[in-house]
Length: 483
Image (cartoon, rainbow, N blue to C red; front, top):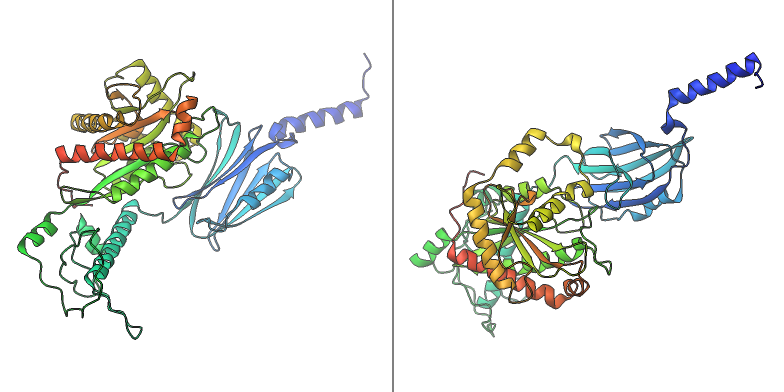
């Protein structure tokens, strides 16, 4: 064996020591970016960089103007990273602009100009499901939208539109020299207790409630001169206004964003079809009244973005939902299983092996969608997930049975009864909750049905009938006003 001269040996040892000090992520070049994705939403915007190896990053945030800089090591500027700029939408509620540049050899700097004050989170996700390593940038507003505020605003818009329609039918609007007489908002019950009055104080004393006009009445041919003030309501009308109570139904389209859910043999993503079904059910709920009480749907997500399971539950609790309905599309390893199923919570074991398997699969959504485990309060998480009540489960079973009886009229059932298992999204101790598996997306025939607008409409109609049947037999309790 040839012995190297002493200077050559010292040089080689120095290089080896440098390698040990730097570590593999400092010297490894050629990490490949497999995909970049931006998921814009009012709640938060997520940016994901997927690569074949774990990326090491350093981030810094500047308040004024708000911007986030992230230095990513082990990368050279490549077309995949430049795609981030092309993916940014002008209507993104949180990101104003993106710049990508080679900051230093083997280091790429990503700078995002933000539209508002943010609490950014930058974290890594290990490979799971179809994903390899992911570097995730979550941009969360310092003042995020409040679900209850949104629900109130939607409800007030509904009341304004209803008042305008009634005014047109009663001929309270006149046209002439360009002037329009618009009635003041009719007195309506406070749908969420005193909170609406606090958030929407009238600029002037409200007018008395006018007599409602059926929607199918013909319009008045000629508009009479508007009265100075509508007639005072009867005692019966005042009593109805006092007792009317808004029924809130939280609709939870499963998966979303980074988590596609199950994927059918034809390439259909579960997250897409369940959102479509939820939107159709939302429209039906918003147009329905039960025993004189108007209904309002609240969506845990209304677009393609990821919502952690615990956040879905907390959103429903924040709006004081009377029900939580989580909508999914089943999948199995083989294409043979078919039919719809409805599940309720169980804390004493699953009602069947299939129900247990399904709960484990759905509870893994957070792993696929990706949550920053370091930012979660483990104590709060455990407390929320361990809480349940016998009354909530009993009411959930009643709701599930009402819905199951209607769903079987539009398609095959996979199970003839409501199944039970420990689904994380059903663990709201104060809200009757069910999870609806609308069909097996892994079955080619049922995948086609899930994409069929007629089946989606028929299923939404069936679920709506089941909800109405439940409330007719179980009127909602008085709402707690201490919000």
